Image: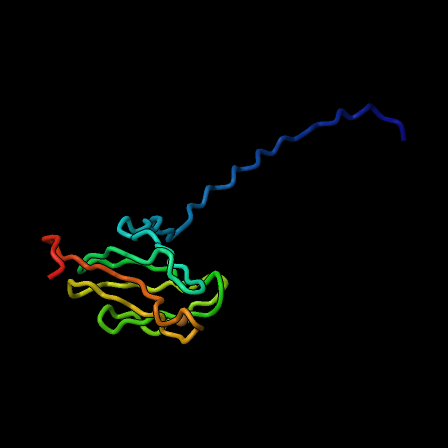
Length: 134
Ligand SMILES: [Cu+2]
């Protein structure tokens, strides 16, 4: 059937803008503790620790990464609160150390590792707030 062309009436139906839904319950970003101490790597090899001296402070937590670059070794100190930690090649083990008492701690390798084992030591010097080791 013929008829007048019906103009294409575009009925503009406004589409309501989608409401912006705020993320409910979004928590404030958790700040990274500013006090996190840097990680100090102590590497064991046949037959030494590198470094073989460390300086720590009473009441301050040090983070040690105990790892081996050669062989299997270990570290332990009851005085410093370091549990027996086996040092093996790989990623290492992070140990938090918070010295309570000032002093000079000589730690021997905690695992019998070969001919150089008896002389394999690391000396950890702990000073108090006055800079004293006594
Ligand atoms: Cu050893």
